[in-house]
Length: 111
Length: 114
Image (cartoon, rainbow over all chains, first blue to last red; front, side, top):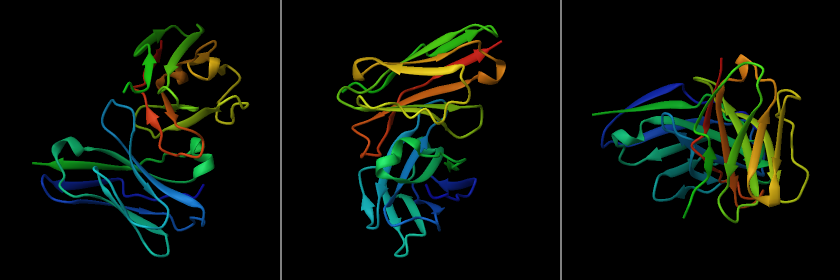
């Protein structure tokens, strides 16, 4: 699986959009980008995933660059409850069980 | 519906003892995963089950660790002769099948080896 690089921490004001970047410059053509988050003392929670097209669901939007070497997770209106560690993972869908969760980005939403 | 459940939520054991950790996946999910998370660290893959196929044990850190999955549902992770470095949160996840990467995690079991 391709390696990902994320900033260790970010702050965001409550009510504003949180944009979390992820670099995955070695991604191959059949690898997907997945995002999870982990709120303190809980198990990780799946957020969204995509291959090449931008994706949106009730939680977030995922923007993948045309060359697929980076992506951005967007939380459109961050709340205090969105404070968590956000993990970006790149994996083959058929090998998703061996996904490597790195250190992620600690997002702190401030009032 | 019910999510992934794990038991116990906390386990304190003495060094050298064996422990068993249990995971109940989401009903109908054929893929099941075990991870370990040490304090302040990311998740470390341990083992993966898919249906009736032989499990992928490539992440198990030593032969003291083993896991089984009975009837394609409940899974037990066993750690023999526990060591202090085994102290961590053990997380279980399930997904619909191996081609669907969305994993649904349980709350974890916090293991403390004294």
